[in-house]
Image (cartoon, rainbow, N blue to C red):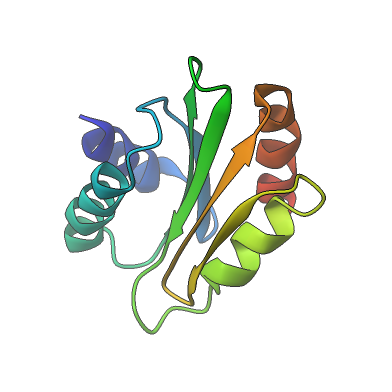
Amino acid sequence: KIAEELITAASSAEGTKIVVRNDFGLDGKAAKSIATTVGKKVKDKAFLLVSADETAGRFMVFAFAPKGGDVDCKAWVAAATEGTGGKGGGKKDSAQSTIAGLEKIDGVLEKAKSL
């Protein structure tokens, strides 16, 4: 379902980066699955997903891009989460970070959209 929403968003979005919040917890495997599904359909956009786990008081930032694209996901996640105390890592085509404190979500979303 989330993958379908991202594919729809990609079809109408301008630019090469799409930032979306969709809460499915801190499930890295689910995020990878979404990335795989979307990556098969969308070859020209990079995505940054933010997903909160209200109970844990933490959220995950997950970015992915098509291989050979010009977006560096590791740098994008690092820049968007700078100053939040987030922990994570990744590669050029896929990166993630987990951050404590749900009050930081809006700032991360704004920063990710501005990069």
